[in-house]
Image (cartoon, rainbow, N blue to C red; front, top):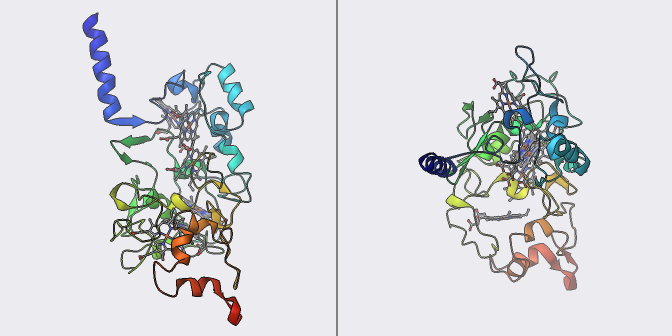
Length: 294
Ligand code: HEC
Ligand code: HEC
Ligand code: HEC
Ligand code: HEC
Ligand code: HEC
Ligand code: HEC
């Protein structure tokens, strides 16, 4: 008996160190697979009680929705999950609710304009995903590599984003090509697809870089509420940014106008010309001479 207990402990310690499956390993899912898959089902159907986001909202939606799952014994009473449904009510959001559905055999990016905008939860998240091995995060959904290779399973967040934010009809109307903007041949870019050359020594930087001296797309494109669930789901700021960012020409400089940039780059440093001698004059202008800032 002792031996069994010991090996169970050892085995779980081993599992903890290696693969972490965000759902399958969760002790909050009281019925395991059965917390999500119900009944006996038909062939080719994954036996889910609800479709698309409504399925996920059972546990990642409102308190009311979560309480139903708790009452049904599928989710533990102590589980504390954020309200992702709320994020998709915001002004700027991925078209999860208002877009069209995802199909398991689709190949993104779409090549014709007949095909329609969408981004479903499962375009970015694999419900069976092995989310983490050591410090490496996984997404385990389809994507594109930086060299333009189609990937069955992405390991970096940006590979998931490139699946849709490339030259294609689906997002052409309002988006430029994030894929090109973060290509390896750029002289200068935010360190998303390649490590920072200065290792985060930029004079104004107030936030530490992530492991490997890189940052994620979702460091910038994320919830405007710092206490809410993380991720590029929705924001009340334009471009789905974490903070306000004014881009109208000749706006007065203020901590609010560039709140977004100043969340990582110290306003005091920028306006005291630590980066280059005429930085302030460019941004603020010269009110005495009547010269507006940029
Ligand atoms: C958090 C909810 C959740 C849990 C827990 C879960 N699944 Fe799933 N499963 C899904 C969803 C959602 C889909 C459909 C995915 C899609 O449409 O891309 C799915 C699809 C499937 C499919 C059909 C597609 C395929 O991969 O063959 C099988 C089989 C399956 N799940 C088995 C399991 C088993 C076995 C377990 C337990 C070890 C499990 N699932 C746990 C949500 C879950
Ligand atoms: C039956 C309840 C349930 C359903 C349905 C469910 N989840 Fe979860 N989800 C959980 C629990 C519990 C966790 C673990 C939270 C924790 O450990 O902090 C979780 C965690 C997650 C995480 C965080 C993973 C990480 O590594 O940080 C993501 C992303 C996620 N779920 C996405 C989804 C998506 C997408 C769907 C729909 C396809 C879905 N979930 C459906 C209960 C559920
Ligand atoms: C399955 C496709 C898909 C994936 C994957 C995807 N997006 Fe999007 N994204 C869209 C669509 C569709 C829109 C709606 C706007 C449009 O049509 O241009 C959008 C809009 C956006 C916007 C603009 C929002 C606004 O209001 O201006 C940002 C920023 C964005 N996505 C970032 C990301 C990031 C970061 C990732 C990766 C974590 C990502 N996207 C992954 C499809 C996708
Ligand atoms: C340092 C912050 C930052 C990072 C990192 C970042 N973005 Fe953005 N992104 C912005 C800002 C600011 C805008 C809005 C205005 C602009 O185009 O200058 C924007 C705009 C966008 C838009 C909508 C408008 C457009 O011009 O296409 C999309 C889509 C987008 N980003 C996707 C991505 C993806 C995908 C990644 C990761 C590969 C990423 N962003 C990384 C700051 C960032
Ligand atoms: C989430 C944090 C974050 C936000 C928000 C952010 N940056 Fe950055 N920025 C960084 C990091 C990290 C670097 C790399 C610093 C380094 O390598 O020393 C950087 C570098 C830069 C550089 C130098 C690039 C180079 O090649 O040396 C410029 C210019 C810059 N940012 C401008 C902006 C502007 C303008 C905004 C607002 C639109 C902004 N940043 C918002 C994190 C951020
Ligand atoms: C455009 C891609 C995209 C879509 C669509 C999307 N997510 Fe996410 N989500 C992300 C990314 C990227 C993160 C991780 C952010 C991070 O690493 O901080 C995330 C994080 C999460 C988390 C963890 C939040 C936290 O604070 O720990 C949950 C839960 C989640 N998503 C559920 C969902 C559900 C449910 C849906 C659909 C209703 C959904 N997501 C749709 C990209 C997406």
